[in-house]
Length: 208
View 1 (tube, one colour):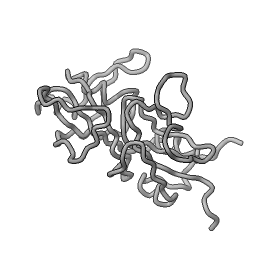
View 2: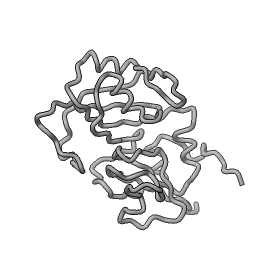
View 3: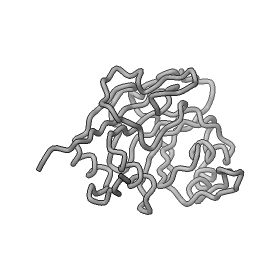
């Protein structure tokens, strides 16, 4: 079997960095990372500049369609810090579905999802954030199988909480783990597809 021509990486995207190599805005870029990426690399399942955590980069353009545009749902889990204490009643609202505004100004009710109150993970990198003990907050994990624009932020806002930090910690069994902000890890192709629970042979063919 010939070696794969494609490369697969995960990074811990820092705060105030966009998920692209070129931008007209004055923000951090993926090209600012201390890593020599191969030609043709791009990010899939992007995070906005205020979000952090697990981001996939690959030279295989077909992965995006299978992972985020297919009919088969794939779980994404986020570690979320919100301002103020969240009650069990509010937690249940998030779990059962809340109404948010999506593209085109349309009301959309989110499907049921897994939401848990958690302790702040030990050794969590602070990044550009400094904890203020005088302001109550709650840490959550939220697991979704969809990704509307700014969905997690809109969900917690719909139940009267402000999202302070948003860190993607996993996509299926592909974990951020202890990878530090700005660091890059290469994943072997077979392991990459196994952890994401997708099959290489299912990848759609590119138009020639």
